[in-house]
Image (cartoon, rainbow, N blue to C red; front, side, top):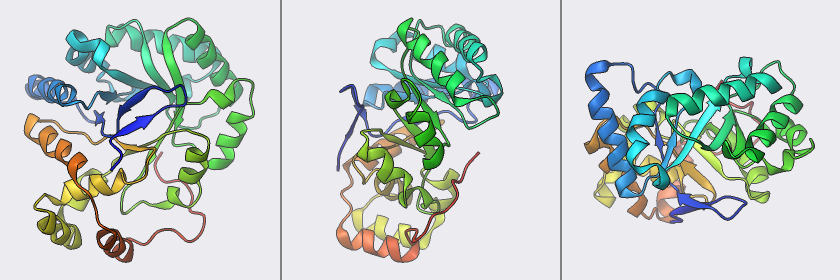
Length: 275
């Protein structure tokens, strides 16, 4: 398995990152969640994904404060804020909440009403100012990706973060090939279907054969394409360590054949799932 993802500028990160959706909701779990993120970073899962919408950038900032230079920090601007001026102001707010001087990858969270041209212009300016290392998008399908890449500087879009797991394979039909042909990594959120895949019988069967857990098989499957990374959320150190073990799983051709039979690949265009 490919253990690293390479961005167009040559930067490499671990193919398994850490999501934070729904973290920071419970004050009683704050310390445990921070420790989970720090454990993942120590293991090499250095991509940490958050967003202004999540309301947990302060928690993430606290978790990465003492190891900021090891971390590839991702945040996102809400579509409602994604005008030229709004994007710049949202980035400043996120920098403040994250207690950092830069965001490594700043994403448009999903398509809104503001023109892509305004968002991209702001992203490029933030990049020139050193406030973001690179920029990208989330939940954007191929036709809009082509529009974005046709804009001045739009071809520097560094990544697309989309819903992708065994139950949601629509992006395999065109978006993943389109992205990887252009050297644009795809970030898979909800790679285990928010836990729903954990109870699947076939995954359990394949997991027993590998002497691992079903979730680890689901993660290994999501990362089987070079250029696709997974960002599962884990709110405890034990869960983080379980996720990390998925990096050492080598799925066989027979494993993939059986999974394809149970969770068929798309044979036609499917509208992008997610937001």
